[in-house]
Image (cartoon, rainbow over all chains, first blue to last red; front, top):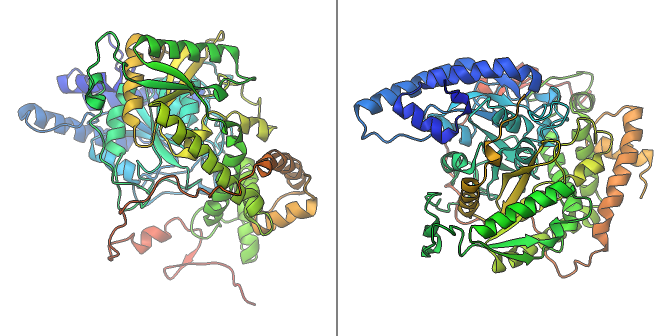
Length: 502
Length: 95
């Protein structure tokens, strides 16, 4: 018997149309799987079975109407169960952001991305675990316990969208939304062996996304393969009048199989990536990178070459400054964004002694230590006497990092590199050393600082059977070339088909 | 560069965070180490480089400034720990 939960999103979409399974049956299958295996993984903070079954019932009704009248246009997401990182607001569903300060927060409205997914007929299975306010690279900073990596329960799933990545890897959902401020979609995708897209800054609405670093935050998608990401990305992307940072730039068709469409140049079936110039930045293959990661990513780049790509070396000389620039800017923005958690408008209130104690005690007690650390760091970087030396200087070096990308993209269409220096590390390995944890993000931060899109694609395993990801980055608003290249790569490799045993 | 306990207390005061003595000392050590690491940026000559505050150029996506429906008062107050007569309630600021 086919395990429907093992099928990809696009296969499920077809199965629903063919009537091989109903959305209600599929939703129940996922809900049962969550109930069965999530106690060991802790990928979900809130399951929403009632809402899911109601949505699935409506999807089945739409499918029936379509069978009677096939001229009705169907969204590929109709009846497809998805999971959503617990940082995006769903009306009436608790949204904790992995924090005690929002333990009982129930948003009265839907984020724009949620509204668009619901309009496309997607079914919400639940909200996934994350590092508190998306600050972390391991999901260990969740106030509700770490999520475990489905490939090894003793290891982290990456973060901060660790719950979403683990849920996709463990077949507890067809796909999931995450967010990526400094790598929070790509790095957990890499650690869990799934495919994860961080779109261009400004491509997807952040209305209803709880803010962390507002010049960096992007809503992204995690799924089993690149072809599965395309319909979700298409559904959520585009201008939103409620988010002035979204741009009105037309979305391409994203017909991933049509490789020759780009630039109207014909390509032969044997070399579908012909005419694609891929840059390999020397600064991403540095001392300290796990040898198996380097080997797998270099092998994957060879595959791209075998598919016809023109591979050349490029330089992103300011890569080494990405970590200090990011942690200065993101922390500064976080210190301002998180000022709103003050025990007045939402969340618990610890004391009523005086207004100042109300603020201090509530925030001191209900924020976790990484959140407090970044608020402190950001407050310092913005404070009188230090602003120019820290925040101002970081913004200037950010320009240098962005210029590196602009220059490289005059030479190549895409950059290929590792996602992270290592595979998933053991739970607890970096918890006492925040700086060591920050250094884990060295390869994912630059794309956020430059606002360019990136994708993490499964590209191998290390000798402990832990997944390795290859990262592709493209010029702003060219998510299509990322999805198409990842899709083409996945036609000739099967790393993305592997399934964890736990 | 090493932060002093007084400096950490001052930042915590600005950030409205109550820290235990133990937390203050841990943050003093960790923030000193992180700021030390970040200080490598100060060695770069950026005198000719403009700062980047946003990575995309906004392009005519601002909406018309016309009134539109917002959230209901009841929904807005729903998550508050203390309310009275349709408002957020806090301890008195003035004696």
